[in-house]
Length: 234
Ligand code: ATP
Image (cartoon, rainbow, N blue to C red; front, side, top):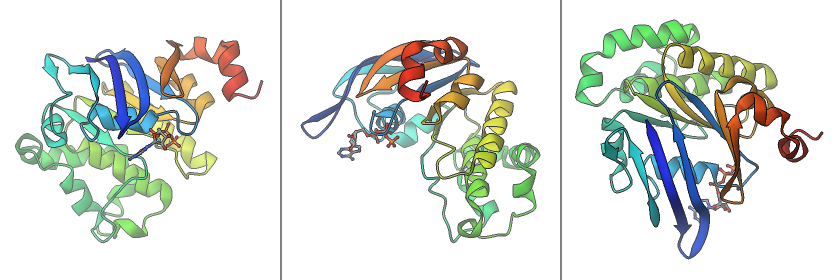
């Protein structure tokens, strides 16, 4: 479904991603793990059109994304849920969710989609009128994921959904991500939380200093000596 080939990305003269190739199949749950500054967010931003690659290609189904603008990419069914949530703090939960459904197709189905996201996140249903900026950290993350789903994407890019959350809320968010996956959503997720993430995904890629150094099934990567040493303190 998503096919990334030989991507090189620079900020000015500084190269941050080297020769990145990977893919995500339809209905797959793939994670990219790596330490701080490895280039995970840059890779997500490149896929969603916020950063333009210098070389390489990004294909989503039959469509080549790497020359398109972010709003065009969303129309093809790819929803980027960025790190740090970026909700509109002075707008209500409902208004934030509605902002996710701006394209005509999503707008037409807004009511049904709202019912669906409220069934996934009942806590948001209880808080539709509350200002998003006053939600707890975990609730804000739920609201950001729910807003990303409102565009009725075929695939979501989830950037560090556990950032700043307690271990309990992190568990809760990961459980919800799994549930969304089991309902048929294709997911590419970036995380620093290596152990828990590899345990729940189908496949994973390890990014180190801007390069993919390992790939495999999540469970196999968890058993890999290099992953154990670099990320699990074993
Ligand atoms: P973290 O887990 O800490 O968020 P990351 O793996 O997501 O890290 P990126 O945010 O992609 O890493 O950053 C990769 C490298 O690119 C870092 O060295 C960072 O300083 C640099 N970088 C990121 N954004 C910019 C920018 N807008 N301009 C210049 N350099 C940047």
